[in-house]
Image (cartoon, rainbow, N blue to C red; front, top):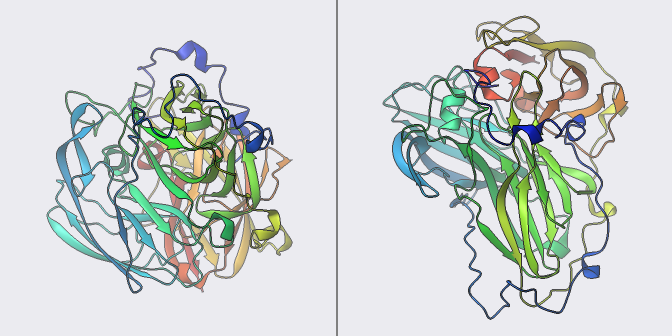
Length: 493
């Protein structure tokens, strides 16, 4: 729910009531896919309306974001936060962006690298910079969301990635309390990749990598609104700032897609027509095995890394299916995000990763639990105030103090009539139970969807010495975070 509420209920809503709650019952809601081999569905004959490899009429309009890659263990980048008129699709709109781009550069580093960022605040409000999913220090000029970078100032941020940092798909965005929604919704978010996800799978080396960054925007009088944002009003969904771009694949070709929900508040429920999404990682955490999905729910801030094998020649749509986040939440219609064209000479499908190729991930259920804690997410729909344990966020208060080295079990209760999204900074956790039902262990994540009136249990390892210090946990529907649904945790030696 975004202020001013749900008065903007729009076309298609009658279809939405039927959507999504079964899919929302897991931390990454999914259904097991039909495991029919790609080679079973390849066809030699061309499909009407689809070009062959010698026909250029089916041009690919998709493009990956621009990139900046570390060199000799260091990445240097300047990010200028500014308000600027830009074009998104066919629309001109004034937005808050980094370096004049709705999709700023993807930052690529390796474990052990250092990232030096000069953040230039050319806005008329404070800002800062958070690296979502990073297991790095929250202190000083590191990944410190308590930093206040004033307008017309420059800030030097230094992020040191430990040698042991997991490979995976992260992202960066501002985290200035009270201004987070306006700045992310305005366009201030981009991808951060720690290299090495495919290293255990030599048969996948050299396959095409796609980065799909999902953002939505509203154009109100030529400007993306920064106040009174109504999340139940219509938005334009984009992929890398493009509206329904076309991607191409050969029948049988294997591609690696990294898909991230890097918008402010909205949900995505992904489905690629007649294709299996072979998920190998979630939230920048490699799974313990390949998991085939027919659809994947991406709550705000979540990411998925999947393998796609091109089906028979034809045209397929990547959709976000309808989602209903509850009586006090929002309703989102089905939208086509991108179009995949399978054409040209068929490829012999690459062998997909086998379970024995995945490096082991520790199952935290085998560890002793030092503390058991319970938290309640609640809200007042009439005032748009949001709470954790009946309290609104206070940056000067420590809500939870944790001892370094402990593994804790947290139970998060959603006492409201809409979904929420739990996220904690600096580390990843393991979901073990939703409403009393065990969740199969396939790895860790850094956000989990909280269905309406639900209880979710997670195991959190406060074991990495780099995380000592103060950071936050909150709802990653950032309108809720801005309006109080956030708390502070301190890890002490």
